[in-house]
Length: 460
Ligand SMILES: Cc1cc2nc3c(=O)[nH]c(=O)nc-3n(C[C@H](O)[C@H](O)[C@H](O)COP(=O)(O)OP(=O)(O)OC[C@H]3O[C@@H](n4cnc5c(N)ncnc54)[C@H](O)[C@@H]3O)c2cc1C
Image 1: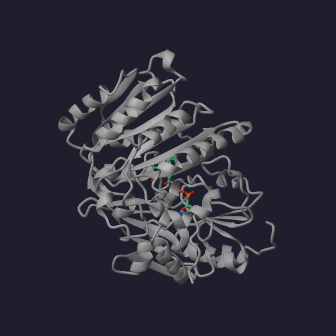
Image 2: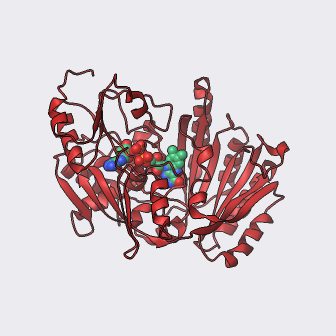
Image 3: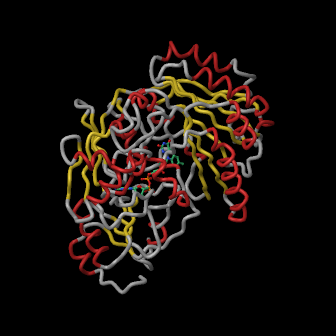
């Protein structure tokens, strides 16, 4: 530990586990998803309850340690950890409890999407969350949260009913429409800026247990035409019908001919969440966009589809992401996407476009901190590679593409896809909601103790 602090005062009241440099589990406990981030905290406080969170915050302040908060450690910017700070780690708080009659779930912040989906699906229920099951519910929710159910049921934040929050003064507050409504407004999109959430309460919907989903793969030479047809077609489809586009080098999937493996392809990832018969014919229309080189589509359990992309998104790789929001996809934007998808610097880099138009667009932009109610498409420039020698090449590819496509984008951005260096973009990402966020930040965290996040500075 850099500073000479006596951890006995913390140990006496802390019920979870405290991990320090030199402990046998220290290196494992400080690993996060993005291998580009390699920080050594002074203390890892694996909390077991809200009281532990209060104790950890108090201890950090008394010892002038920076505070970071780890849900499942998935965030690309790596803000859940810092050098010489105190990491409040929720790895041991992963409980999910479902009330199937009321259709609500209580979820602890260390739960992954897999934990949440698995429990809710025991009752045929789910709420919109992301598409990679190892992602943490905490960071995902606090930044917005979208996935295959978003067109129909909105963002994850649109389905948050309440949260239990420990604020930097150690108080335990309930945030909901009725209690501490300003805090509830702020945490629905404003990230971990306002306090430490110790439990989320979500609304659930009947989903599955089977859905209709899969991949339809086209040769890259047809990319421009596929994207143009996709853009025109997807806008007239119902909200239970989801198609996202991924441009990448084809992994060696068994349903693809061997001569396609490792070659650039355009993948339509399809997920129909209800009314399968009616939507089968829409899938038929997608096939006619070009000459597919392979497909794998059928009924499958929702939980399986929620894990379908996990093998491509394992922890431990080097990652650098960029993101844009789009209200429309102009031909020039499509040209830029296909140009950069044609020069992917590694087999794991990809460009993905999610179409999210639906429920979210019916909610006013000032209803909560999450502001992107005009958003139709989210673009993620996903730089991913293994060898540190490729850092410069892969980062430059992502940055160049981001810059080249900026002029076609809306100017908004999804904070959960932003990297650390983009701090200047935060105010812009929140647009008109930023001013209120800064005021609420001043009320709940006037000294900006919670600043390892997409930071909102306390307002004047
Ligand atoms: C492979 C991959 C796929 C993804 N797919 C999607 C997707 O489909 N949809 C989508 O919406 N997003 C997606 N994301 C983005 C994801 O939502 C963010 O990375 C999110 O921050 C992850 O949450 P986490 O809890 O794992 O993160 P962490 O890194 O643990 O935390 C991120 C930040 O959240 C805050 N935080 C975490 N826990 C708490 C808490 N208990 N109280 C207060 N603040 C807290 C802190 O500021 C922390 O720095 C994806 C990310 C990756 C890497």
